[in-house]
Image (cartoon, rainbow, N blue to C red; front, side, top):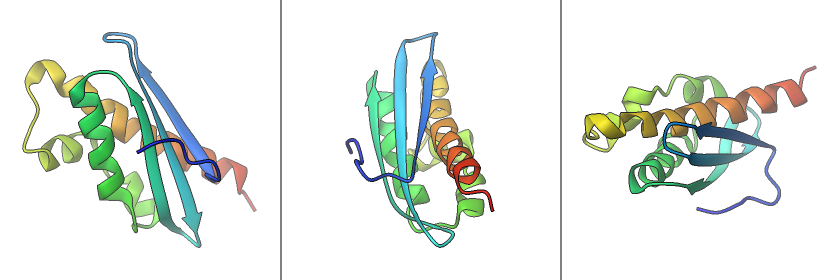
Length: 108
């Protein structure tokens, strides 16, 4: 948890419905996520999903991490109340945004 000063990329997402903001930081070595952290400002469900996505993505290739879905995150937490399902969007979308930004920055 927390900002990663030497991150290779940062994903940024927000949910205007509830005001939650999430930042996902990734450090990539080769094609794998070597380190990942998050800063999330919002409800407990948003923080929990952000934490879970870091656990799910660490050590995976960028392609494998891109396949982590919103539902995967919610299921890994044994589900979320329907009113909080939008929170799982922050985590997966933030991860995908970080990977896309990393790929853009490192095009060959």
